Length: 363
Image 1 (cartoon, helix red, strand yellow):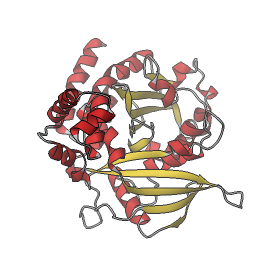
Image 2: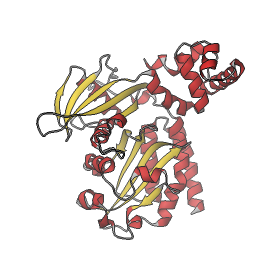
Image 3: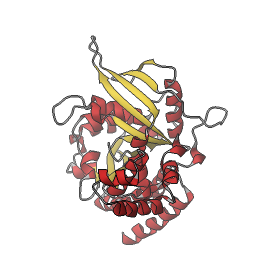
């Protein structure tokens, strides 16, 4: 198996060179994995490192049909191999049949979703880089095929760090811009999009910008006009899920910052609303991400340390070197050392250039 891992690792390096955008890279990785770990359905999802919510997925038609229900099960119920659990496991990959002791029917996700769709087993994995999640991977096999083996799980697990390292530092390329029917890039709307959904994600009301924002998100994922974008489904599922602390809706966590083709970032929030009727409704806001929301993603992309990130936050706020050092309880000399490191990592030479590199180009 070591030879197979080494061979696939070399191919992954070439994939990273030939497919510079995260979406294209995830698609190419699935094609590569299919030759070593055969599967009949797959989903490779980008994940927000702070919230663990989807920023967009690459799926096939077999999985797309059951994708919305898989969201519900992931955020609202307990089951085998949940991504949150795999993220902290020693081996962040597992097969459903193996985890259930050869009885996948013990899984409610299997009984209610996978088996009715014709699938007999699922291999799940979480991609993590420097302690932060950046992707979820799900491979599925039909019922007439043998379940995933321990060797196959170990093979996938061995490749996760390499894939995660690429996704952690990769940005979206302009070549994958969202397009209108005429093939022209879709600009980000200036006004926030606000819409109301039912708890089954049926659109009930929307302002004038909502359709434009949904078109941008759908274009980024290459999904049909009648499909609700995955990041929207993810924040809604989180808003509807009970908080582990007190059983109340987890509105505070129902937020995600999503990179979109062309270099922009979009903030999506969902909040549960109580109405006089028995039907639960969700208020969803989609807008250009604020600098404070973008910084965690860019810090990961450039490999900034937590202290360097704090220095950048002060610089963006317009603080002088003395003020920034005082607020961080460090000397100005130490602050300058951190700034030099930030300049080196981001390829900038001044504070003004740093601010443009991190934020201005996205507005």
